[in-house]
Image 1 (cartoon, rainbow over the protein chains, first blue to last red):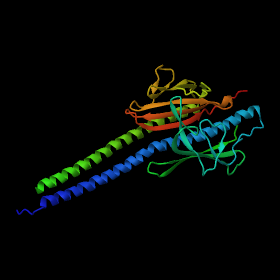
Image 2 (image 1 turned 90 degrees about the horizontal axis):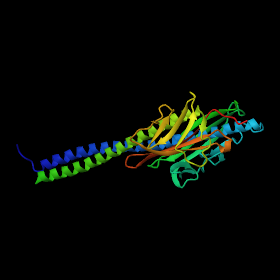
Image 3 (image 1 turned 30 degrees about the vertical axis):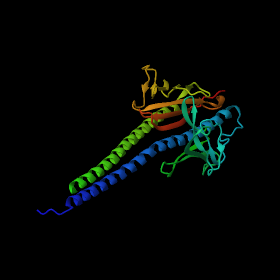
Length: 171
Length: 157
């Protein structure tokens, strides 16, 4: 069998090309998986922050119900005009806020534990709005609250989580 | 000579490729661990939130500005339940057994606390729970926070 000069080198280059394509393909796939996986932590945080927004809204409405027992002039939906608001875990009322100018939540250290609030010092990419709308069919006894949490993923992609809840004047 | 060059090139490419692949796999393992940790914390907080929403008699009713490591309440079955940060895990105790039962995995280090407030008695107690997950090397995997309050309103007449 005649040996052609450079044959081994040629074969090696072809083999390396095949291996390189395979490795690059697998690396691309893994990079995508890693990127998606990393966003899971942010999604979990955002979903819980959105749920917190609804829960605080509900707690403020319950406060109105308690006040109505001693002061019937307090409306069940006092402080719930239509619009966009901000709340954090300290809020006792909804704070009106322009939906295009939301503040970033910050990490606040209290007693060795970290909390998301507007009083913190460590910045995050999370912003939260609470939208209040009166019921479509019953604007007096029905409120719809929608909590949205916005954040920017590591690769710069904007993300959003949204939770809605309906509240009624049933008490 | 030609064989040596070919082998050399081949070895270099294989080494680079293998190291990239190994690094990616290590990152993937870390991300999988992170996803598992966040799932675990989410489930623990969800369990706590569901039980608190149906509960009553939260103690302390107002923790003020202090971060607590545990709180107790009466659940829908009239049992006194305590949730706590016990060591590096979140635990639940219903009094029997006295030893708190961990509800998070042992390979995740969880640090956090509870803040309880009721706006000076004008609102139902509101529990804010925060939990930060770390791996065994101290890398932060995520920080989850939520707030929950009981659906039963205890009126002060």
